[in-house]
Image (cartoon, rainbow, N blue to C red; front, side):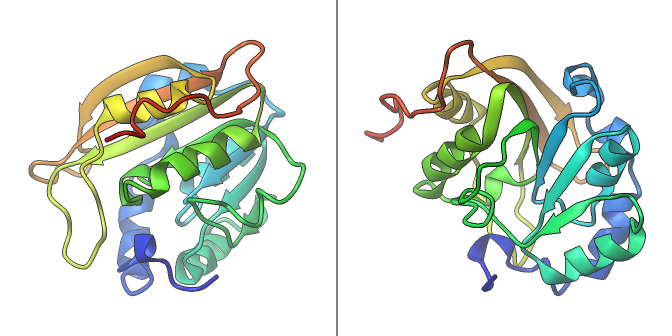
Length: 215
C-alpha cells in the first residue's frame, strides 16, 4: 500500500515505537472494556494493529485474528515478535479498507486502538461506513481516541468523542461504554476517550442521515 498521510512518521520510528507499544499489555490498555470482548473463538479485526500486541493477546485467548496494518516496518516487527500466534496480517487501512472491504468476511469484534484521531474530517464518515460494513450481527467495536499535543511529524486531529458516537449511531452502532482516562505512558497533556459500540438489533450498517454532515 502506498504511503498514507495518516501513517506519517510511523515507519521511520518503528523500532522505537515497538518498544513503547510492547511495554504495556493488552489488559492494561483495554482494562475498562475487557468485559466486552466476546468469548472465543470469535472473528476479530485489529485495525491499525501496529506491532501486533493486541492481536497476539487475542489470538492467545483463542480468537481468529486479522491484523490490518499499513506500515510495512511495523508489520515486519509484528511478524518477528509474534510469530506462531496464527495472526493473519493484511496491508490495509482506513478510511476505506480496500482489501478487507472488498470481501465477504465479517467480524464479531473490531478493535481501533489509537487510530481514529489520524483521520481527517472527510475521512471519518467513510471510515465508519467501512467499519459498520465489516461488523457481524451483534458485533462490537472497541475504539480509543487520543486527545492532546501532536507529536512532531505526525498527522493527528482533535476529534470529539461526541462526534464519533454520532457517526456510529447513524450507522446502527449503539454506544455500550464511554470513559475518559489518562495516558499509560505518562505523556504530558495526553488523555484518551475509550468508546465501545455494538450493532443494534436489526441494524444493517446502512448509513442513516448523518448529524455531522452539515458541519
